[in-house]
Length: 407
Image (cartoon, rainbow, N blue to C red; front, side, top):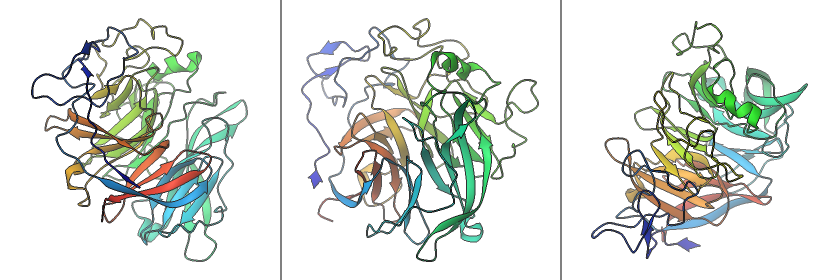
């Protein structure tokens, strides 16, 4: 099916959410026109939310490569073009470009596949061509609860029955906690070979406050070496009581992460009722949750003191209210969609599509576009040919390929 991705909107709101009759003369309307949940909340700077739509975009065709997957969560490309795909119930599959789906790959540890838990992200080792290693994150069942864990193993996929050997668990989120929500988690290898792991704060009132507690891994981005050891230049190494793996803190539930063309980490996290955030996490910095946030609690009450800014806490680069429910992201660098080059493409669960952000030279958002897909988009990746690949988090989950319309 072909989808026109530029929409015509008749009304918009200003930065504080007040209704306007239309955009200012010469301005393009924003993609988001619904009432915000955070009444009276004011952005910290222009275009921190409800940026205008871009001046140009692309038309695309959607092709279903595979279907019948159970809540697929992530995909990664093997060097030969095949895909690794995780299913949240605990299955890893190898899928050909033609859509042939392997049997579940044996060798993975058990997962706690309740609610938001299960088998989550998957990534290839930077040295995969020689070491054959893959890394994956998952909700690990433990006595007294569970927690996000990261494991690695050698993928043997050159025969008819792929398998994983020599599995090692290299990281375990601490402490163990009894919750079925907010596990994170994305895996991103940095240019220096270290591994970023994004971790949720486990959602419950008793755990959410621990996003500010450096003695726990709740609500953190952590940075580890490929074997699970701690890089000596992490910001909290050697500080008594602080966990040395922590890179940044004050996060809620980061389920999107990617490197930009300069090799810098960017993340997108789920906010409360309103308040999804785009951030560029830097070493040792505090991103505020749950002390500051845009949006409100699901109950309708303010979060904490109901403030959106505080000294010593970072503002998001961008936020969404109402939410898009972000999961998966990539910086588009291909040639198949010239108007998208340099954009951030983010999966939307509630949005049921892809959100495209155009960044300006100041690393702030200049434009936002909504690309409708019609299903919950859980992960977004760019293929070698510049096509965009998606997985949909549904009972009948799909692998979708976006190509130029008419191409």
